[in-house]
Image 1 (cartoon, rainbow over the protein chains, first blue to last red):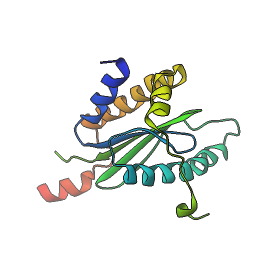
Image 2: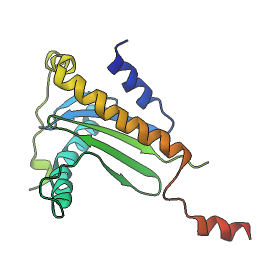
Image 3: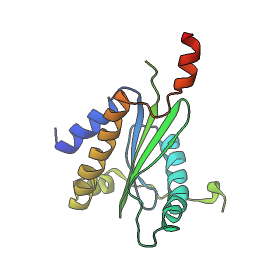
Image 4: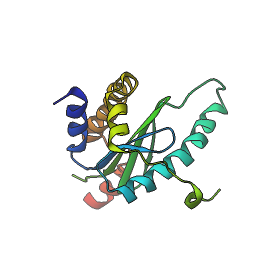
Length: 97
Length: 60
């Protein structure tokens, strides 16, 4: 198994992780543990929300670039790491001790 | 613009595999997976949203 496959599996099997999605800048799904419909729903939201989150940071710092963002509720948590060409998104269920 | 109007281009398996094998992808994934893994492991020890006032009340 490649190093990429290993990290992907490790994230996917981490306690609480519901699913993992990798998309490109257009939102096209490259790799996903979700079904096609769910993947595309997440994908559309990510490419919609990303430019806004990026702008939010730029208010205070023109040349800054968004490197990680996260939205959390009582029970759910979504982490997204964007870069020039791709997005990695991980959906979590918060586990209570 | 409405979300439903957005069309997400679908890639076939060959295109996906080409991307997964590319150096740009490998370098992206190596970096970003580390960030995510770090966040996941930190979450296991600390929950920044724990409401301590609530648990104090329930104990008393």
